[in-house]
Length: 333
Image (cartoon, rainbow, N blue to C red; front, side, top):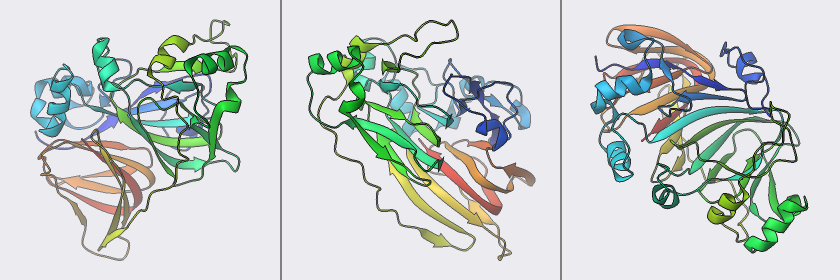
């Protein structure tokens, strides 16, 4: 029973989304636009479904409720420290297609969320899968401000002058601690790894209308209560070191107290040995294919995987073997 399995994501049709998640990743979700897919999630706002094996057709959270040992040790400590149940993952893995600018927003930290009975806060990481030539993101303020100054800038529509805007390109990595005012800009295709939270305080939204033809709700008071109002240091790309072994190379993209993310470059075209993925870290892992395709096997079974596929690997599961030419994100708890 302790075998990996494929997941089927929940989709979100936010107004700023595009169609690349269906066109480029073959998600087959009947939404237009398709802004986000929640690839690995036990969050009630968008639970993932199991798509293979004996649990096919069940919610991931239901499986973890029945087999809490699949989470392993470290994530359960995080969950219990915030009063969440054992069947909830501490992380959430998404794909995001921004055809238009996202709202200017901020997420609370764990302390604020716990104080207000809101579960986990939201620290996140973005890995840029693709970006148009002029794509940018908002990363904090370009100068120190008071709450009163920022509130006035929101009210008179000049908040854009206060924001630090950073050009982005394919393969960039950005770590977004809770409290950072931020936004993904138009033309970005992003993999997001975050705490399992849907707490978003919208500070500014360009006066856009929602499906009800009314201005989308802002949360200015809550945003100002949790936002870091100091000038934010301009983000730079971290030094990344590739570690090679036959048929595979890996590099660390991000490590924080909530998750660790590695990029796996798989290429077994010129070697007969398959690449072994060994569990045993004591924690679950998530494998998200972001380019290419291949085969993944466990327990004598072999399964093809394609760009956009997501595999949940239980803690201390059966070892896997990989074959193909692909790039994957490996996310650990």
